[in-house]
Length: 210
Image 1 (tube, rainbow, N blue to C red):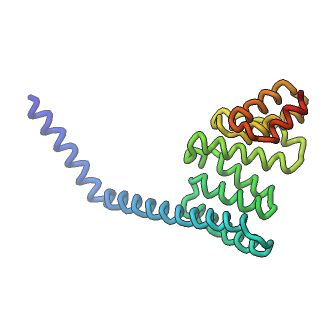
Image 2 (cartoon, rainbow, N blue to C red; image 1 turned 90 degrees about the vertical axis):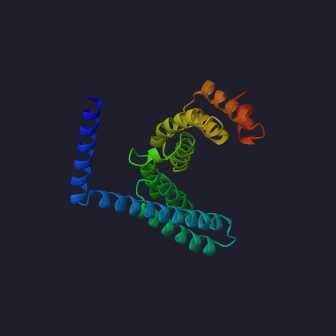
């Protein structure tokens, strides 16, 4: 009885395999997987090169060098996105480059894509927290009152995901200050100092609030 059941299972599996083989499905699947892995590897190479170029652009001593290196970094980020459009890291790199170039609205757009449902799954919780902090920074830097609430929401989630980001707590305190929420601001600054006791901006803010 058991032997007959096992034999039937084997025959069913064999028939399924033959059906797939006749339609070239295994080959197509594995070829697709190989191409995907190759694309991901190439995307990572472009991302790493772009990150290196961004670091050099930030450290450059002349504006012309910064601009030239930033353009190269942006091109590498775009290549990485084209090869792996579901990887949030490339969109984050693009946002950082655009921010360096002074294109904050475009940088914010790229950051929004990085944090969209399509790509955010590729980030760890800590990485997502850091990205939310950076997006809040961009929103605050644009000096628009309409973005304060949005930045506050980003920072509130950011510090939940990444409890050791002192700068995120400090910026959260600034948001609360702007909204005249003194108690919440004090708590945020205290958390910033818990993480990084030497953070002078947080200490100065506490002195100001005290």
